[in-house]
Amino acid sequence: MPRREREQQIIDVGVRVFAKRGYHAASVDEIAELAGISKPMVYLYLDSKEGLFLACLRRESDRLVAAFQGAARAGGAPEERLYAGLAAFFVFVAAHRDSWVLLHRQAAELGVTIAAAVAEVRRLVMAEVAGLVGDGITDSGHGSVPGGAGTGGPGAPPGGTDAGRGALLGAEDADFVAHALVGAADTLADWMKRHPGQSPDGIALRLMNMVWVGMRHVLDGEVWTPPDA
Amino acid sequence: MPRREREQQIIDVGVRVFAKRGYHAASVDEIAELAGISKPMVYLYLDSKEGLFLACLRRESDRLVAAFQGAARAGGAPEERLYAGLAAFFVFVAAHRDSWVLLHRQAAELGVTIAAAVAEVRRLVMAEVAGLVGDGITDSGHGSVPGGAGTGGPGAPPGGTDAGRGALLGAEDADFVAHALVGAADTLADWMKRHPGQSPDGIALRLMNMVWVGMRHVLDGEVWTPPDA
Image (cartoon, rainbow over all chains, first blue to last red; front, top):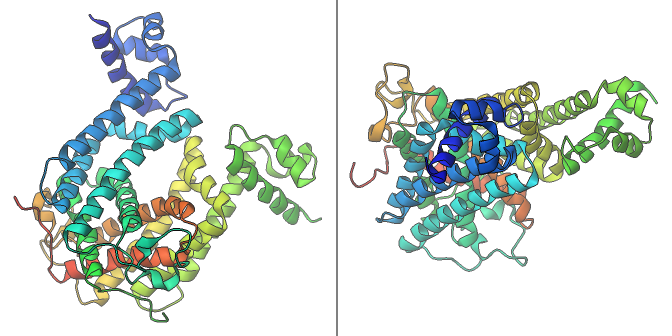
């Protein structure tokens, strides 16, 4: 078997075992045995337990990013692409629960290097989502408005209850919405696990409806303010 | 100094040191020294490093829950209480960054017991948010509608693109919105750290505007669907 194929086979097993046992409790012995290969061979190919874990993380994060970007870049209006990206995310998590456990839960368990690698993936996705949200804002004819929170920067007013009106308008606002969406999607991945009757694309659609419909109305000037504001 | 006061003092230092160094790298020696107390005394009061960490987690999670509930239960319409709760959350995180690092990042680093304790706090907050969202739905005269996703259960249709219409209507839907909100708030706590010019209540208000305005419109039948649906 060629080296690359053999490595992929070890990584397949690694993802499964790390997700099941956690990084510290997982043993290279078990991974080698399940992969039908000797332990020295695992070390020869992937260097160490940490090297193996990193290879697992890297492959699964590449797959997740590819799934998201493949869907989000397929064309259409920004909101369609955002929906397609979200749906691809939920489909990926539903189909690759072990990968998600690795990326979402276990990376935090580990050292700074690994946490930084995962944070980088998150930044990539976040930037892509913020781009789509920003495009959606621009396409609807609502550009950045002077004085809106979008002008941001050190000179910007300190927020307060003014932040409601004109809040969803600039690049900073697109970044805000992207953070809210990505955070919501993270947590809804857990929700999805407890609601197996709900389809991934149905969940993406509900999330779009919560956020996109509201964003459009806020852009049109409909703003909720607390009664004492 | 009475025992309880002494313990609180050790916990104060513990929160700071654990947040700065992480659980594994933190040393009881350093905590004892900074608290101006002997190491055996720390063990006498808090049993072990894990015992100390658990005491830190417990106190900070109690404080966070108390801040959230104090604000969210103060009275007013459900959406005002939800906003007040969200604002209290962001105010807490801004003022107690170390507590948040402990609760949000480092608990994952540790064993199943600790992770379960933190998950329980999250469930408490989630249930409270879901209650407010549910009350908001009921107050607006939109009850649970037969056939909506809210009827849920094993017999419910498998979602798909039908999940958009009538999606935000029942207890399950309130739970869905609560998960999205809590996940968004988690991630926006990071965003807030990188945008020190933005006030916590301004961030809460922007989040309310994204979600609440959209939810109201969806309840009124305005639904976004992808073009091929």
